[in-house]
Amino acid sequence: METTHELDRLGQDARSRIAEATTIDALEAVRIAFLGKQGSISALLKSLGRMSAEERQAQAPAIQALRQQVSDEIARRREALESAALEQRLAAERLDLTLPAPQAPGGSVHPVAQVMDELAEIFADLGFSVATGPEIEDDWTNFTALNMPESHPARAMHDTFYFPDASPTGGRMLLRTHTSPVQVRTMLATAKDHPGGAPLRIIAPGRVYRSDSDATHTPMFHQVEGLVIDRDIHLGHLKWTLETFLKAFFEREDIVLRLRPSYFPFTEPSVEVDVGFALDNGRRVLGGSGDAPGHGWMELLGSGMVNRRVIAMSGLDPDVWQGFAFGVGVDRLAMLKYGMDDLRAFFDGDVRSLRHYRFSAFDQPTLSAGVGARA
Image 1 (tube, rainbow, N blue to C red):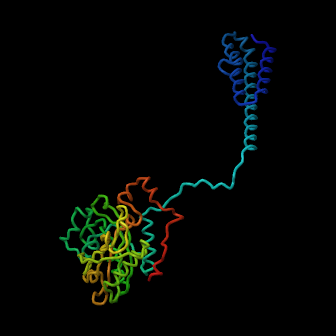
Image 2: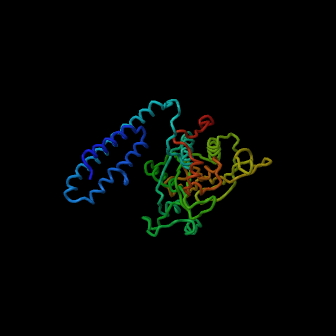
Image 3: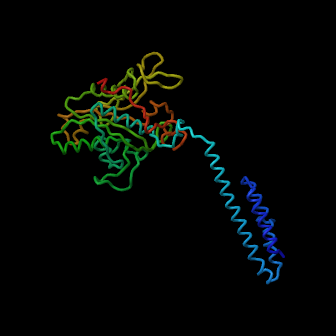
């Protein structure tokens, strides 16, 4: 049985050792010596089970009080040691405020969005406005109004994503296969607001959908189409517009175009536009005539004079108003300008690819020379 004198001696010894502890580790050793499973005070608590009820009633309060006092002393000493360590660390450490701050994670601009912005900037300099339309279209606006008969291959199920519901015109609803319906809608709106017609200069960028997938085709891709409606428009205007646009976009003055006769139901005459290129370590670099040694021609876009039937179905008089139209894949333009070799990298969500081709939202590449300097 422990007397009061012996408990006082044990408590004094504990307080003395606590006061002598100068590190956290040393203090932890004192705690284990007195309050650990094999500690002196813990042994006293275990001895209570072997005492009679009268002895336990007499000894338990004193032992519990000693345990609480030692525990409190250890806690206070730990707080003092931690505070002293912090003060010492603050006094010794120095922060160099001249060092640059670490770069925080931030958003970035997708290559397709970057090209969309560049296109809008270039054509704005040429007097074009941006027009938009729904991605879910009816087959009249997507096909019929563009002079595509029922038997045209583009209407086939393997090219077009159709919906089961009927359209308001009695046909079928579908995911638009090009942004040409925006041209139709814009001409219809112009004819409604200006019964005699009015000049138009628009580009129609946006998502389009076709059932196709490989290294250069995806079921969803981006397209930009242009439309000019005015009096006395001819192919010369089309060629100048495309040359000016491509020179500004690729930032090269040596862009050379070749127009080849072709066929599109919504233009007549229709022309495919090829651009000259040279091979540089196996990579196509646009510039120069494709007929020069070591050069070649690459098909880039389709274009032509707007078919009279399309102008008439859009509510305008084809004897008064003429125009030209063109269309090109935005994703393909991005691939050519920024050296990408697989269209699917735009959409597969591979973080490595997106990090490699991304553009800073605050430091985007800008056009080195505006169209205004050339126009």
